[in-house]
View 1 (cartoon, rainbow, N blue to C red):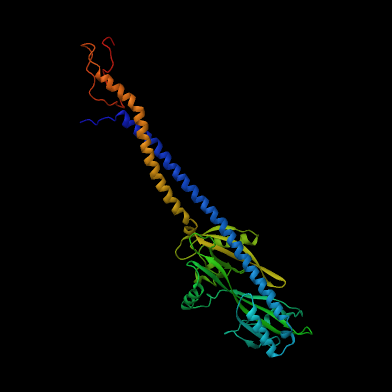
View 2: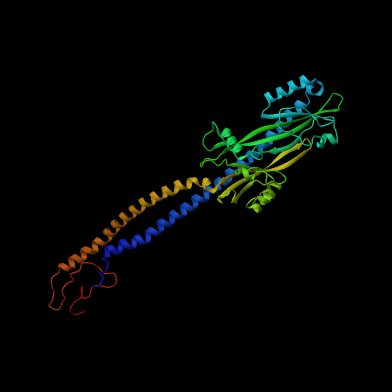
Length: 385
């Protein structure tokens, strides 16, 4: 049997759907793509701002430590006091310091011997190599010995315990980035002679927000020599950027920071999972001494999936909206096809009701459908043509 041709109404419905449905789907795809681009642009701006804020916070922390330590070194207790007065001054500083004081160490200027210390190991392996030991100035000075991470020397068990201690009391996904600042300053007596060297290990934090809806990001800090100070993967702390995956991109970031730029760059394989990350970066001019500053590289990084987390909700909304529009489109097609085909169907019906006008007139066709490919032969012809 031959396939039955489509009726006029069915053909009209099919063509309306074939024309309108692709337009609807293309519009949804363009909307989704535009939403993704907008979310990425927002993530880039927020991560760049976060990196600038992290760099500013790091700079302010070091400057606050510099001021406090130089005031301590300029106190009369350290300049001319006896041993008990010096010890009391160090205890007061521990209590009022703006950052957590991990330990303090007091060394003899001439010999480098430790006079007093609350540290497990010496903070200054080579105290006689400090700048004021080479050229005493008679004035208070400051020296940034190291900006370190507690993760660098911790064992795996210690790191897990440290993370538990840090995360205690915080919201899920919220925790501070631990940093240990080791600084030193000289102490001169009233005659301007070098008396002591005071060194301190100070702990301070930078809040990290790893929740999907937040773009504060995790912190990566790289020192001026290209050594990783903090990293989401503690195993990479202490390595050179040349040893990291995607070293060329890290070098590009460092080069951009050196010329004063703050921007965002995509990173790949930041962790072993190989996921794509977004990294906002900025430079922090930290005072290494009273007369010298160095540019440290501060990054705020977050996985691309977290930056685009809202895209999942947008996809769901667009999916439901598309289903609704497709249903509405089908109903509209049925209505339009009916309104346009009804007069033609009535005409066909009336034509089929007409009786023979002549014996030569062929009977009206029994099929009421209008075929798309041809016109029913004999319909409406007069005997004389």
